[in-house]
Image 1 (cartoon, rainbow, N blue to C red):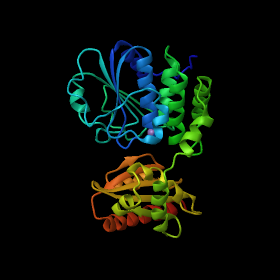
Image 2: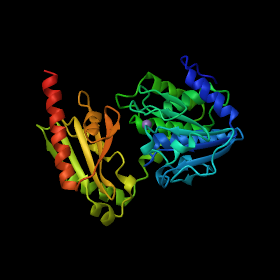
Image 3: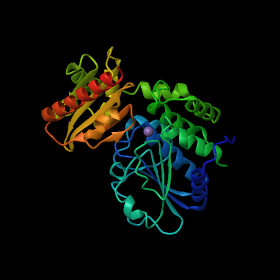
Image 4: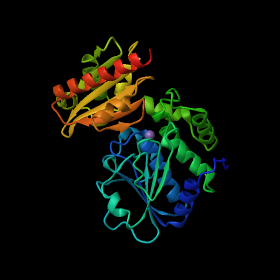
Length: 337
Ligand SMILES: [Mn+2]
């Protein structure tokens, strides 16, 4: 099967480089989500399938809940690009990673030893690769990788199709977020024809919670605060909430989405106190723009889903954040009149 892509020089160049390279290093971003993990697993699997020497690298522990899509693929926890990686015919592929701060360390230095391919859908991508294929209208990097693989002569195996299906549905909320498009659905068709099983994937994704995660969520729900005339909501997790419940860091991934289910709320945030500062996950509904709030604190992401870190005590971080959310909400309300 060969899906026609719009004319795209970057894709032709990527396929040419992948084809010519014997050694691939495929990298996910920090705190791997379904999109980066699914894309990286699919590309690594492709590499193995066509006889390349592949390393699949994850900046930290690979999240258990995505283990099902690994099949027999090995992955390594890498805190930096291995010093020995490089030389003729080596390629480093970074997926869904908007900047080097979110990536495995050492990509900058590795640029001199290998070709760096940067495939991403974040509008604020800093174009750190030799080849940068950035499509902000894609609902997931998984759409791009689906099209790339379908367009190439290599195609997509059933396992790769499942991994890419995970990438797409975890980033576009099962085709419910405004970012999902006819293109997203076309990619789903390609993946189903390649053997993806949406039923199996949703079963794996929806029924994998730990009791500890539920207890952690309860702690956050209990601290919900709605403000700015019901337009904004926050909740937060203290360090004690994590260690007293025994929950893992990634158990709070996408927890913030619950706040947007409160009637009238259009801008929501989860603050998690960590050793590295207060991590903020922001979500919004149009016309509010979560990215604008995150940007005030040096963060980034997408218009409707973004994040930042505030290096303050949790109480101070919360008050700074809530003030900024309130300011943004009032700009939107008055701006739309
Ligand atoms: Mn993504």
